[in-house]
Length: 247
Image (cartoon, rainbow, N blue to C red):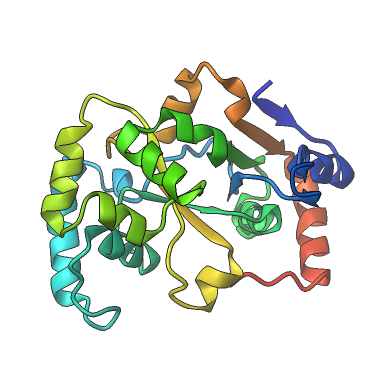
């Protein structure tokens, strides 16, 4: 089952940390990305999608202008992948989706909005280690060469260097393929570090990740943990009293 509804704090913890034991290294480590949402009906749509209209056509213009005028956030970048991550971090609508390595951070975001306490929350979990096999060879081979599960900005720039033209080339190369790229952003500030941030983006900016995941034959790659509305207060109190701070 990909969608599981928990009924208690203990059951929630067991599900969040299920399968973490890695016998190869004798450590509790999981190749999982977590995303917490305050309403289980929310989709995994990006801020670019939420613009509406012909948002895919607007993407290069937004990024070009951010690179030109966003000098208070960064020096002008010659890497579209660097521009994308910094733009996402500073609130520009992009094709990037925010995730975290930490289940606790995901719980924070699932319970931070008190206006949605009458609604069920959700934690999305995606195994980015298993997602690698759906990548095109060019990307898959790069990860294997680096012995990595996720990309860095530098790794992506080695595959497709350049500014907006690199993104256009990416779009044209893979317009008929569906896959997701997981990217670890640079440590831009304490917020990125404290939130254990990891980003993702789809090969097609118009493809919602929900739909892509639902079509996968490997159902063990992802999971949705539904949090009842009546459990949110307990979760919030335990996070707060433990002084779990992520902002």
